[in-house]
Amino acid sequence: MGKVRRLERIFHSDGNTTIVAMDHPATSGPVEGLIKPADTIKKMIDGGADAILATIGTAKNFEKELARAGLIVRLDFPSSDIVSGVYDCELMIEVEEAVKAGADAVIITAGPGKDIERKTFKNISIVARECEKYGMPFIAEMYPGGFNAPPEMINISTLKLSARMAAEFGADMIKMPYRPGFEEVVEGCYLPIVVLGGAKTKSQDEFVASIWDAIRCGAKGVAIGRNIWGHSNPAGMLKALNSIVHDKSDVATALAFLK
Image (cartoon, rainbow, N blue to C red; front, side):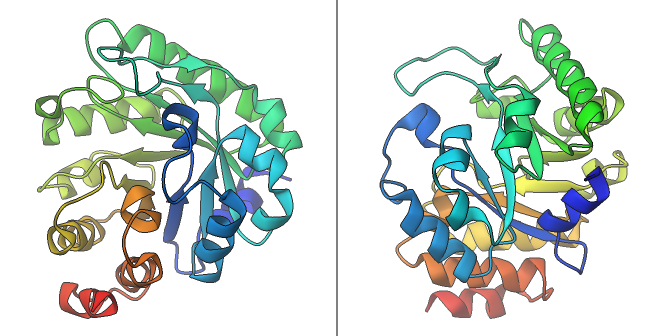
């Protein structure tokens, strides 16, 4: 199987994708919403998720539940929630392991910034070469300043730099934060970009509006976790996001699914 066929498992026929991220327990433990992965996986796929982003452990132990959607496996580890001030990541899983687990793509985190860019971009190069051996699509999750870096590190200028660097080092697709003016990031990168959800939002209206704007700017979808399965109405939020990502709905139409 090659990259094109695997990517067809992740992207909807319209060229966009709604990815539900469920890799959080690797760093946060049994967070509410992911205590019983099988239940959440079923609800997310039944609700219209195109793909699930998971750890190798989830991929191996819930293969049957994951079979109906695309599967993205995380290969690296940033640091657990009890550690602060660490912004780089260590490669932990080989691409071959993800292949054996049935992955349709793999993902690692990287970003430009002092003390982290040489290490994290070397990781990108290593994984990109391994992915070519197996025909495995490679997603680079790009955080300017590194994983959980201070928010002030993330702006349009640093996002543009991050996305283009990942493309030049061999990624096939980008996952990254959104900021107003995101069209400049899309225009400056020739790879498909999906926007991540970040920390659980306190304003669902602002969150949904930001996703609408990201898609308007040319993003090819979303990769969101806490703001879906951690929401008080997970099914409604997934429908709201799908209406924007796949149906090009406006914000008001999307928010109606949450009432």
